Length: 190
Image (cartoon, rainbow, N blue to C red):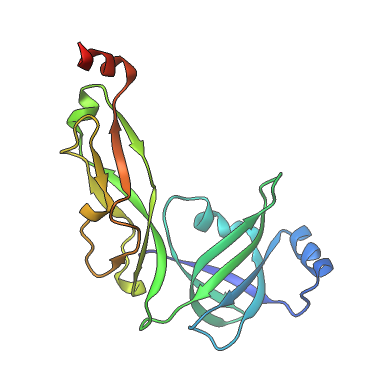
């Protein structure tokens, strides 16, 4: 899995006036917590560093460099302004190489479906799967082969081969379905 570095600076003042000053300067207030560190660390980081972490379908492990202290973490939550959609706050969860972490991994579709060739439509039911495992064994994405999907058929989570990690999403959940358009539904009845 890819690793991204984010440089941060500790902040001691946690009141809302200080947070607004940090945001006005083009920075994002953040917090990191979890089993990888003994106590919470409040810090801020330039907003531009989050572009490759948040605005991408890929997932990354994060290496936080907070005034020289390196902390391995994953992005747990990002909060956005409801109108301007500016990043307001980021929560990171620290991890260690020996403890299992829970994470959401994106789904990547591969292959050519005969159902699509007949006029069906590929419908994503879920774009990410919740998994758990050691950080070093988590993949960049979960591959789904749709080569055998015909019209009206779907690929379920239970059909995914998981090596080195465990899938927490219910095995009955559909990942992708080949939808039947109305025009084709009428022809089946004839």
